Image (cartoon, rainbow, N blue to C red; front, side):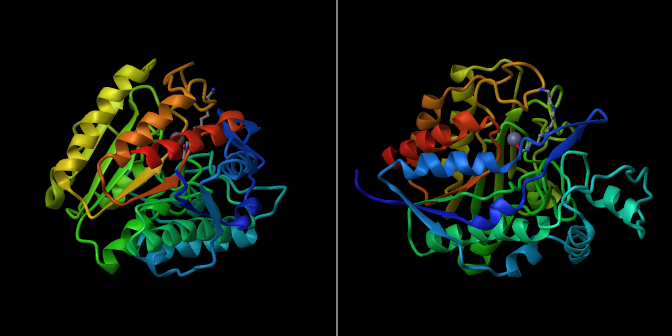
Length: 345
Ligand code: SP5
Ligand code: ZN
């Protein structure tokens, strides 16, 4: 096949390279680092189909549709006061119904829900650039491209309208969805195949009947983020039946995973969305370092090809947006395997 598959990325992503995350009070090497980007770019450059574009289209309009101005202001301010050698990590979180926050420490706890999502001097700028890749991809989709891949980094699906967490600051997928809805789309489906529950995306669209959100992820009983992602979260009152969670138990293999994928894809094919956005995480690969239980999910590189093929066989214009995947040795090959599958589907 000689047809090209458009890819959007930004070299700005190299500017966000958090040195450590805090886990149980200890600093450990941050898993969402630039080696991930290098791994993916290297693998894409070895294909004969990836048409790699540097994102030049920057517009905050759709970011402001998704995130509150107070949160964006916080992110900007915190980035400006941060130092490279001292990434900002929260120490205190709001409790009960009291979440007023005016001083910097209180704000940090108010807007960042874990200790894995440090704010660095360039975090705000790079997070916006990452979302711009998703919007650039959505733009091309809207012009008629059947398949597009946005190499967004940092990722986005844990970020909500007014919070950061899980290595995510701006919800890239939500921003792309918002862009498409404001253009012409009436109905959108988001399929989140990252290993972790996309709590931010679910939260953002929970009351929005025009956005169907489907999530296949490690069960909150044993995995991060653990506050959501249960099967009985069907959508809010104004959007009941538009949120679908498919949590899986620790140790899941390809066969059982495939059954969940088929269930989710059946829903998408019934919904018949104008566009499909895939929150494409590859931390479902066997041995990913974020698994809290060894081999909690055991997908192989070859299996991502099958996932891609099945998604593309729906025949819905599809934008895949990069989320997780933390073993840099296999991340690039996993992405390429998935994209090959998409092209075959
Ligand atoms: C976008 C995305 O995939 N975010 C994932 C964030 C997961 N962060 C959890 C970090 C927990 C580190 N625990 C280490 C487990 C020991 N192997
Ligand atoms: Zn993940």
